[in-house]
Length: 533
Image (tube, rainbow, N blue to C red):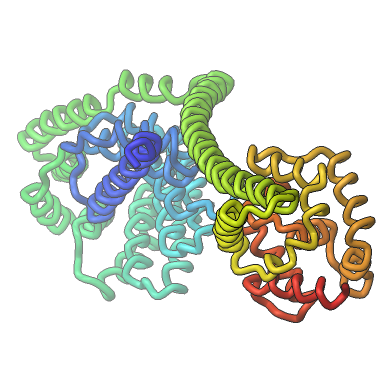
C-alpha cells in the first residue's frame, strides 16, 4: 500500500494543484465581473504559468486576460495590452466551444485602453473585433455598445460623417432591443457635430428632442451653451458655461468651457475677461496636451505594431516549450505507473505459480506414493498379515487424502482397475510438469491425446462429438479430469488462471450434462465413464 501511495503521489499533487488554480481563476474572474479593483492581486502570474501548461484554450485565454486586468488596474497600460494580445492569441475561433463572449470583452478592453492613449486607428481595429465576436456570442447589447463606442475613434480622426452614420445605426439597434435611453444619448454627439459644422437647424432639432425626453445632463448643457453662443444668446450661454465650470473637475472639461467663455467675452468686447479666460484656456490646453503627449502615444504604438513574424515565432517557441514539459511529465508519470503495475502483476503471478506448485507437488507426491504402495501390495507373494494390514491402512489413508484433493470425485472407487493406465509414462510426465508449473510442449500434448484415443476410446469419441461442441481446451480438461488431474494441475498445464478453469469446467458440465455449476463435473464424468464401459 505504501508503494502505491508513492507511485500515485505525483498524480494526486497535480490534481490538487489543478483544483487550486481553477478556484483562484474563478475567484479573480468573479471580482473582475463585479468591477472590483484587481491591483493588489499577486497570484495571477502563477495561475497563468499553470494554465499555459495544463489548461484548455479558453482557460489560457481567461488567465492571460485577467492578468492584463491586474496590470490595467495598476495603470500599467503597455503590460495590460501585451497580456490582452497574448490572451486573444490563445482563442481557437474554429472550435465549437470557443468563448466568443470573453473574446469580445478582451477586444473591448483593448479598444478602451487605446482610446485612453489617443490611438484611434488601433482602437478601431480592436473595436471591430469586439463587435464581430459579440455578434458571434449572440450578445446583442454588447455588440451594439462596442459599435457605438467606435464613433469616438472616428471623432478623434475628425471623420464626423462616419460618427453620424455610426450614431444613426446605433440608435436603430438600441431602439430595436428596447434601450431607448441609450438611443437618446447618441443624439448629443450628433448635436455637437452639427454645431461644429454650423448646422444650427439640425443642432436645435436634436437638442429639442433630447430636452423633451430626458433630464438635462452635462453634455446636453455644453451643447446647448454652444448653441446659444452660435445664435448670440450670450447671457444664456454664459450662465450655462459658468454652471458647467463650477461642476467640472477634469482639465479636458475646463478647456472647452474656457474656450466658450473666451468666445462670449470676445463677442461682447469685454477686454479684461478676454485676457483672463485666454490665459486660463491656454493653461487648460497645455495641461490636456501634456496628459496625452506624443511620446506616450509613440511608445504604445511602437510596442504593439511589432513585426507579425516575431510574435508568431515567440508564440511557437512558448508552445513548444510547454508541450515539451508536458510530454516529459507525462512520460515520468506513465513510467512510474507502468513500473508499479509491472511489479504488482509480477508478484501476483509469482504468488499464483508458487501456490500451484505447492498444491500440485503435494498431489503428485501422494499419487506416486499411492501407486508405489499399491504395487507393493499387489506384488506381495507372502501371506504376512501384519505387513498386508499395514500396507492396506497406508493405502486407505493415501486414498482418502487423494479423494479430498479431487473434490469428492467418485473415480476413487475405480482406481484399482485402472492402475496401469494411470501410471503410464505420459500421465506421470504431465503430473510432474504440473507440480513444477511447467506447460507441456505441443508434442507432449499430441502424445497425451493419442493415449486418450487408444485407452479411453469410447469416452474420447463421446466428448469429441460434433453435436456436443466442446472446444479443444474443454476436451483436454475433460480427459485430464478422467485421468484424475485436479483443477490446480489443469490450470498449470494449460497456463490459465484457476478462475478460467472454473469457467471452462462449468461450460463442460453444461454441454455434457446440462448442469450449470462446475461442482458436479467430476462425479458426472465418473458416472459417464462407468456407463460407457
